[in-house]
Length: 514
Image (tube, rainbow, N blue to C red; front, side, top):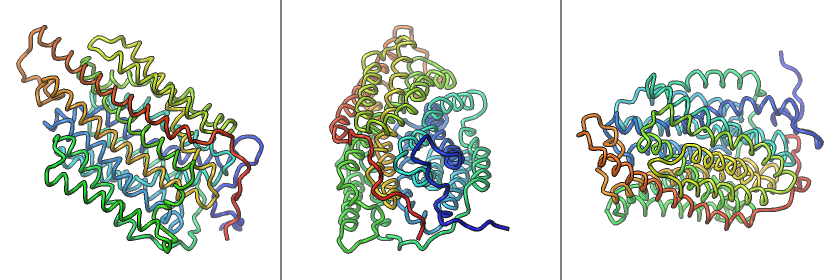
């Protein structure tokens, strides 16, 4: 038997009252959403610690293996565009549960991979399955809490970003060292099962409303366009030859598809584009997007190579390098809840500018301090500072766009901003990995790169040769961090245009479904 439905049944929990924090209903939904997000984000940080082992086990190279990370985030970006339509057509609860189920299936297959190509393919499948977990969850929470508490909501969604950098590398390092790298994927199966059970029990039953027609042409243009453009650029950088026929053809084709999508989405007669690019005409949304692109490229790229430094230059195990990465998550844990509340009180622009400044200080610590014998305390402090800055940058940047939107615009804006974040992360990881490899080659290191550094069959070098080897590798890592610092510096330009006043009362408060 079912209780009579209230007028807002399909909206999930009602918005919190204007006074105080989030109510119990919103917090219950937040618990479900956070668990699914933890699974998705945890998988990214777990894989970063295992990259060196994957290079060695599959006898591959870093530019190839980094597609285990880049392919995953790129797949997320290609499937995110259908989130808005699917949420309306099937309901957010059903969409959220389907996404988790497909993500778990992809995880199980990735654990069975037999070579680098199959692993990359299964990671893409995993990303296609889980690409809607975060945007669907953000839509559920944002609409439940209302725009006046969007900063607090974003700080809750940011919990996985706190736990992921702490638990992910440590868990991944232990699994890689003491069990098998395959279990960094198998571990998602039990977590996903719990997330599905809680979603089924806690989230209210969907009553899907009549959805607008899916912009199929936009999907055909955008998703392949993103994939082809990033693949072409990354391959050209890897081969150091953008004029190659295959590289040039793929890059140009991807760019043309994206241009075609832009024209199609902005066409006056298109009232239901896959991504509402008209929203990006608003200053706050455009500024948030620009800040997110540059920040994600620099930050996620920098975090990709740090475990490689600890393992390849300092000779640490995967588990030890995971422990050494923990200060970043601890720093974010300190500032992210504070950043959410300050965003609601002071405005996101002020918070983001402070956050970016703190991140720059942390990355500068690596750009100046990475050597073969850098103090772990100094590097840990720099990493802690980076985490503090991230906690005051990422979620407030998303909040800056959301606070200016009306209720019905939130799902589409969430979709667009999540695509931007994932695409920027893909570009950043690919760019930094290729740059690091190029710097190693410029330093005269062997083409085997990271695999050669730990190859037990390679001739044993003399102490002098070993010292020269690790010195050159450290130089390559240091140069890579200088590039991350440059990207972060450019992020200040769009961040200066973010709103610096606290949000006003909503223009269009959440209304009962009609």
